[in-house]
Image (cartoon, rainbow, N blue to C red; front, top):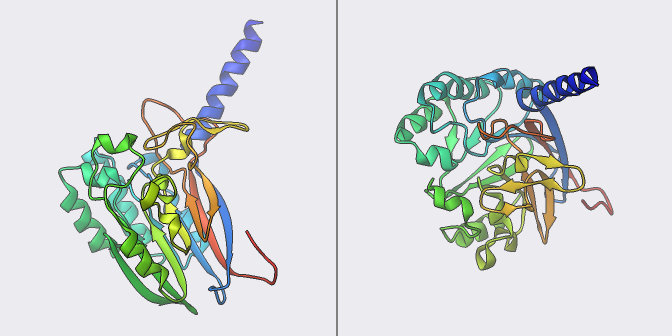
Length: 283
């Protein structure tokens, strides 16, 4: 009996190590009539300056992306030195692979050394989008990226379900753009849980978000147990969601809460394939 319990305990420890200290790749495919040939996007969120993810840059390079999107919380507000060693090196690595666009999350907004973070990102070649759009050609595609930012990292934001800023005018502008329309916002709940300010009132090919950490603990048939801003049994924690004329891809992130290990929720890099829509094809 003791041996059986010891073996189960050892297996649990091994599983927790796998689930917290290794990185997987999740893939989603989104067909659209606006896509001509195809676009491969790598999306990363919630690195939180974890030193055990230093090989993520090599993983991303193997995917040969056309664009890299950083969806916030790439730094850790409690660990300035660790951020300088890990996150800043990551910024320099990924810009060697493909064009990189980023938004700030609550951790970037909360630190007193925010301008240092901004400088490191921009010197590495990352374009930070703060409530603005950028339009450019990528391969044979015409791409518009809108980065949304509430400008706040307050802990009180964690338990509200509505954005602090009305972004609908910016979203309508993005909606009118030709070609592929991409929206970036750290908070997935803003997609559909913000009442009259919900983003899914507008059409776009994909919105990318993080923040929820996959619900931290995920159970079969239930999903994530808790996410800041959404509460218990949150709706938007991981994967692809389709509502109205918009798609949302939520990264479960790389780092997490130091006081609560991940379970059933392996850290992940997300590959988003935007593909031409075939006749009769729907998500």
